[in-house]
Amino acid sequence: MGTPEFSGNVLQGLVNAGYNIVLSVSQPDKPVGRKHIITSPPAKVVALDLGIEVYQPDSLKTEEAHEKIKSLNPDLLITAAYGKILPQSMLDIPKYGCINVHASLLPKYRGAAPVQYCILNGDDVTGVTIMKMDAGMDTGDILSQVEVPIDIADTTESLMNKLADSGRDFLMGTIDDYVDGKITPIVQDEERVVLSPPITQDMALIDWNLSAREIHDKIRALSGWPGASTTLEGKRVKIYASRIAEESDEASNGEITVARKGDLKVSCGDGSIYILELQLEGGKRLKALDCAHNYKPGTVFGA
Image (cartoon, rainbow, N blue to C red):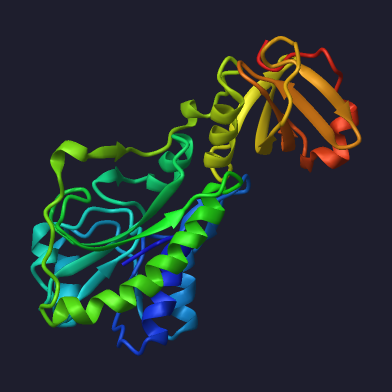
């Protein structure tokens, strides 16, 4: 059970390892982009390419969904970023229960957006947890974990790809030991729980009073959706990529200090950043290399 590219990567790994996948469950197709084109989730695309049956129920809490899964008599159910909580009745179906591939080092970052939050918070390391599922939100016992370092240039997309690769390979080494009873599950420490609720549109606004590192972290964490944003002369500007400047300037927070030859430098509460990719309201998404000269030093973002 899974929906995004992370899930498709894990599914491909299971097939490559020789496991007999009898069904792939994804969330329903959804409209994507400005034109709202109905699009299949990446995990579904991978499954169909592999010749695996795909099931896309609106809910797993229905009698139909329960009977569908039960009729297959599965040994094991694996979830990887499926996006819905499984009811206990579903968890009770497989012979060996259900295990989840979660993109964080639980109990840190339980919830829907663990990758975004580890970047938002400036973490240097994250990882993948293979856990035995229960009816809670990422509350089950831990079977195994692997750490993955976070690079200062990592975005949610690039880090998700790293975690998918690590999680896929790590899962293959965990399944057999788990089924053979060689793993002693570890109960999560509730005192160390950190939640990662869904990312919302209102989190996008950049506060230029923050440090260059904090602003850079927000930009790379939200680069996929909704995109970190600010305003310039009454128009919204989305910023998709940045890097931290080695030197800062004496200027107002949010003030453009350099705008030439691909360099678009902005002063922050502490330090400065170079904007590498942005999109002015009503315009195209452009690299600074193509548009920095259109901006004016002394102009202030977010004024």
